[in-house]
Length: 241
Image 1 (tube, rainbow, N blue to C red):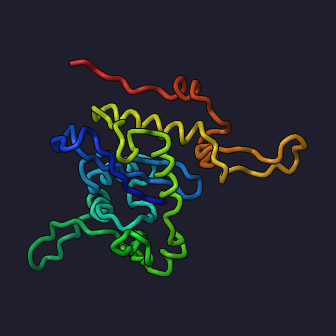
Image 2: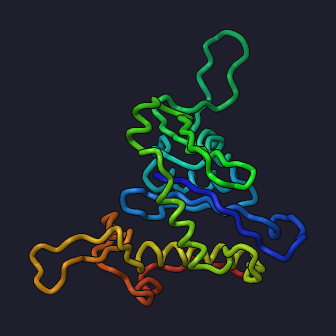
Image 3: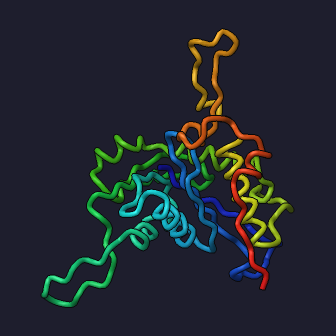
């Protein structure tokens, strides 16, 4: 899985930093095989946003340990992994009983740290294995965050709310969260990706079969329209108080 952070400012310049205004971080977990966006988190800090992502993953098929993960050098992901999946060791009977959560021995987490000069130009890339055997983790994850970086670019092109130095910021946190949910749904189910297409050997009319990330992940068997998306997936109910 690829993990990435991006920030979005909600409000005008010098907007007060509160739980509902100011700068927010968005964390996204991407399945590198299918390019499916499997979870997201929006919060005031990188760690809080990452915790939301791992709590979502814990409910969606990863109940005992985090999936093998690669990310850039931004912070928060290691701490979030331990907070959501870590366990407190059993007391051995000596000294103080342990109280801090510890990572699992079977976890796999790789960071790709980019080293830049004062002008921001990339000088080198350093692979840092946070959890797991170094050789095994690097061979499994490949040492590249290209997929998650590309999906970040897609996010910014799709939603003006994420465009840097723009007036199209979100005025309400709920509106930003709704826009992020709709964007992920359209990306997963509606928009076919060129890199996921499959060659058709027995079709004389077409050479390629376009596929969406949801098709590549075997969640659906066809490309959905926006109408199908809005009518098939149930909307969350709200209670007015």
